[in-house]
Amino acid sequence: MSNGEQRRQLIDELKDVLTPAVLQHLPEPLQIHDTGSSIKDWINERAAESEVLTVRDRADDSLLGLLVLAEFLEPETLKTVHLGYLFCERAWGKGYATELISGLITWYRADGQSVQLYGGVETGNPASARVLKKNGFELEEGLSNSTTEMLGLYIPYNFDKLYRSTRNALGEPTQVFVDFFKQYSGKPLRVLDIGCGQGRDALFIARLGHSVVGVDISPNGIRDLLEAARHENLSVEGIVEDIKTFVPEDKFDVLLIDRTLHMLLEKYRLEVLNRLIGSVSDEGWVLISDEPSNMQGFKDVFTSSNDAWEVKIDKPETLFARRYSQRRGFQRLP
Image (cartoon, rainbow, N blue to C red; front, top):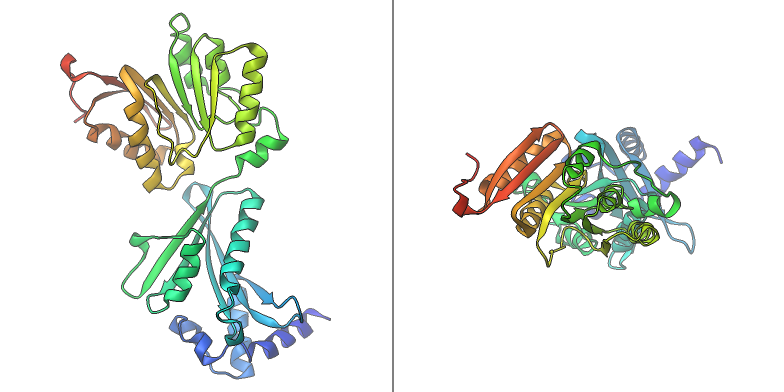
């Protein structure tokens, strides 16, 4: 069947799908009259601005609905996808929407790339909101209004997939951290490496005689880190955990976060940093490498802390801060 024939067949099938009851919760620009001509224009407009996928019944290949994906590229090259879906009336109440969104999320996770998914739901359509929330979407209050709830789900880059196939995937340790730890090579430090991966920084630090606890969500990354540490008899502990919920049990001389926080949404990014700096001992350090656009938010975390912090290095992609006890007279940053 040619593409033209497939398009004509789809238009015929959509006559039975795009009924008034199905269309009632769509925005006004998406409303149509139930005629072949207007349906043709409607599907052509959707295909011109988005990727349109058909959802079919496995039993008889009949059309159940449509999935519409509009892709954008946000700052810092984060892929953002706005999704929409609709099902014919005979498919309602059978769990197809939940299954569809679950499958879409699974596909994006398997792809491995980071992506931000958004779904806009009319406030009078609680069923669609429940479908998204059931699949992990959360309300984005800043993007919502009185008529539309915007729900979002962030899928991070799948480093575990990368580490499974590639040893030393991230290369050599970051030079600014190399320079810092070389100053302390004769004084063993206890270091917490957040988002340690396969140990790009942690192994170098341990080779200088320091004790390192590495935390990463990737089992393969922690596996590689511990294998290398055992081979060299280094003082390294590995913890598989999501940094969004990780709470350190001990105090550390150095908290190291090497290009990890930018992979989180801002609301988690600052929350995580605020929680983690509490694990730094008096006169200890926080060493951060990240995107320049995130640095002011990080500095604000130190400024608003109840503890006394002093920024020692403040560069576009680097922020080093040191904690002091109040009794030494240091005040919070102005």
